Length: 66
Image (cartoon, rainbow, N blue to C red):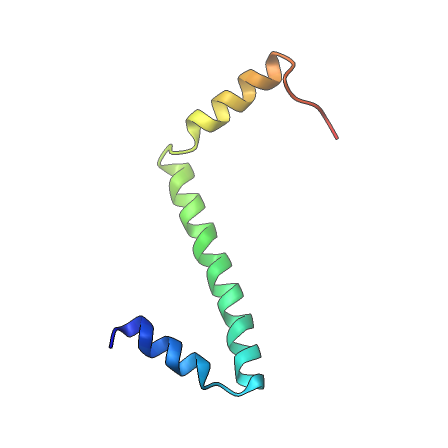
């Protein structure tokens, strides 16, 4: 049994209130993890091309304001 399968089994056995608490914890954990990855990618330059393309599109009139 893999670690993921064990975790899945443990989660499936949670009471409704424990499952709700776990779900809230995981949402926060996942958001923090995503933010860290986004920051790492931004610092590492992985988003530079996307930003440059967006600025070029905006400068050429291919964007609109809301």
